[in-house]
Image (cartoon, rainbow over all chains, first blue to last red; front, side, top):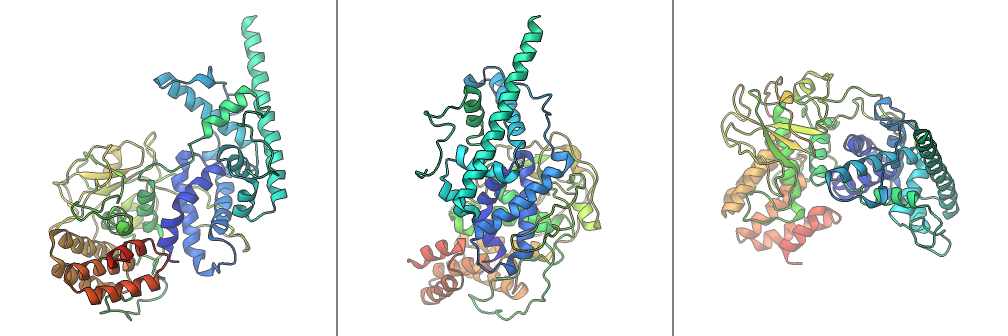
Length: 178
Length: 328
């Protein structure tokens, strides 16, 4: 395949993979470029021993890890600033709802950032995209047991982070009541 | 979900808390690219690719189904100025979209892009700003040693002038994410709302100064961000590149086809083939050639060319279009 064919066929996959791996939406366009610059350079060496998507996902993972290290793409809210959006479950379509949704997404990013990118990818694919363990294993070219192991660790991280946020909110609410 | 998988947290029987469920629901639908992102990112990406390492062989010149640039993925001399971005944008929204559903009655291919083209009110044609330099990511490919991505960081917004001068600008407009500005083809370029639908593109100029020095508007292909007038103040127009010329020839051929002038289209495509035998847009050129051959009544030649194309590029996104043309 030519570079342009790879781009056309897999652009959406690369974008989604980067988002799964925790690249911020506002940074994803730049990260996509990073991925395809590597693809452009390495494509002649791609021999088809692995699936193209597996190869691309590996590149996406490395790009996501690198970007995660960069200070300017670190999350915009720290754990201390992560506020629990009020009425998160009942967001409507008005402006306030947009703000709440934005807050919720920031909070979600904060929670997911506590995971490794590998765990996060498995978590998002399984819990959000509803892919099966076998599908994830095939995509990532890893054993199904590894998928389940990463998912378990990711869930522990997710639930632990959410629990800490709730505890903090309760504490703050208690302080406010005094 | 297989029988081996655990219950999902969002499944009703799970023991997820209300907050956990609410957070996960926020993530649903947030990982897809926005409309127009594919074309706009490609436009910028192409300007960052290194030039080809092997000189053009020219071996396929003269053949309707000749070289389609299978390995010609570099851009010779591309980052030389504003013309490149015009060409690349044209490519992104036009020529490269051959396989996505042409509509000969439209000014541009249907479905070519949904990248919004907006006008900015600057007196100088181009200026983009790039993100501050960042560390090049470690981009080890599975099974290989770790390596560094291309020397530049990852700006979707990049100063054309700075590209030309081989340096980066140092500022990034706040609050204007990922806008890609390209110079308007002429000072009369139509102003299209930012919400432009598919098919709204900035066409390359017809003859004349493609990149006016001091007048004219600036069109901005914008992904989800407003145009920023301050982005359009400093660059200088530079000569078109090989890619710009190739893209313009294809655009000319396409317009000829839309006018029903297949003979003229074939002449233009032959010029493109001769001038850019290993051009970046080889497949697009051959697909246009096949269509022009069919429309000019040269069905036998067209069918043979289509067969050759599909054999050479069975997985190409253009193959479906060629297959349709050939009546397969």
